[in-house]
Length: 266
Image 1 (spheres, rainbow, N blue to C red):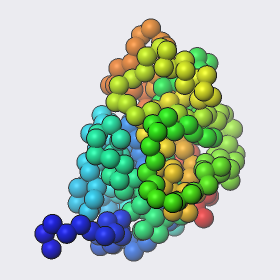
Image 2 (image 1 turned 180 degrees about the horizontal axis):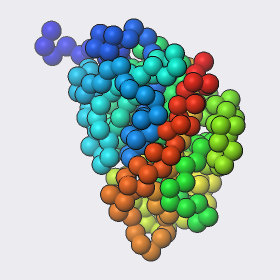
Image 3 (image 1 turned 90 degrees about the vertical axis):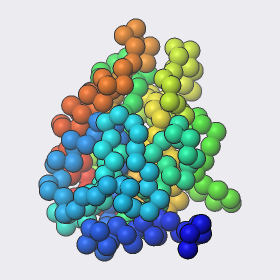
Image 4 (image 1 turned 90 degrees about the horizontal axis):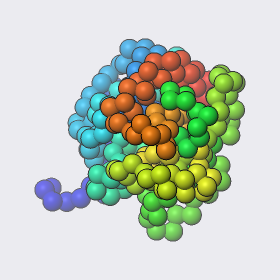
């Protein structure tokens, strides 16, 4: 009926996803942030690909370097849902669209979430193009995607099991604390220094709300983040260069992503 709000938009989107992909249940979801699309090449050919706008409740991404599609893969027997892009808090739509993709994945049967993004590094010893493993996060937006008395324990938000596996697969991976800021502007020198002193190694404008909702839905979460700029660098930050650096790193990191899905999905 026109004008009637869907009481369970994630369930509706999951049902539509199953219909359009022909895959009744997925086990893992991968969210590919800015520049991360090339990593999907390591997953093989998709079984189905569709625009996000074909699914109820999804909003087409607006950030540079995000395709706005959803694809279903079979990664050596692991039905995997890949979201090429995400919605951000800075778009002004509220947090429900930001986490709708994760809620849909949970409704579709996913038990594992791999979240990727591009970051600004607060450490001058981490070069542009380095991929780091998210160990923990700081939510510096004063917001939460959870509403009401949902007291979700986030002490193990970033799965120790999956982090251990990731380091086994790639011993060069270093771990980082990721700080979530609202954006869309980049930080001043003083703001970046404040965030560094607060305990963060890298910062960005995404991922944390998805991780919170994933844990609330019972999913195990692992995060991979590409250094695309160094905060405080006199060269400044160019959004196109951010995407370019992430794309180059994603081409090298696809095999790690595929192995995490094969060996880490519960």
